[in-house]
Length: 164
Image (tube, rainbow, N blue to C red; front, side, top):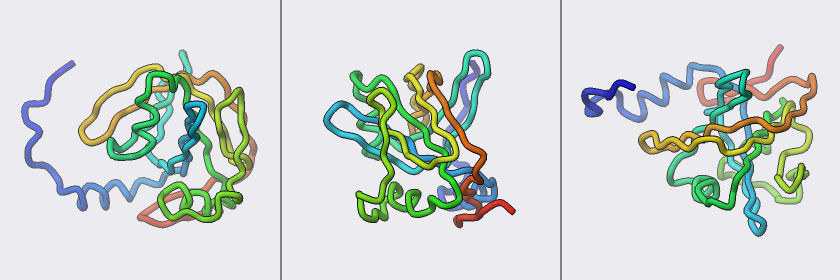
């Protein structure tokens, strides 16, 4: 692995965010639980990494409550729910603009909370944890998945969109 020569300078956080906002992405809810607490967090920083073995990656801000939960050694799994076009309110809910908790369609798969009605759900075993600046990358080994053919919620230039 090559080491960066310098990490000073570069784009401002605002310019970087505005530039990356031109990349259309799906919207996911990352979920985890420790037996007493269950938590969800909206994330568009989600990517498939490998088919063999089945690996995905999520990026979590180090200041996020989800980061504190995922950092616990007893939390060995996390979930990823890809939201449908009809689930914009859930993206807002888990992005810090909560609506009524009873409107969250929680369901569990072997004790792990996931979001019902999502286009896809993945159950991931924490495979590797990689510090990366002000975020931490969680590489997950996918143990279970299910999906539908519904349309996903899309995020582009700071706004929600739908396909079609």
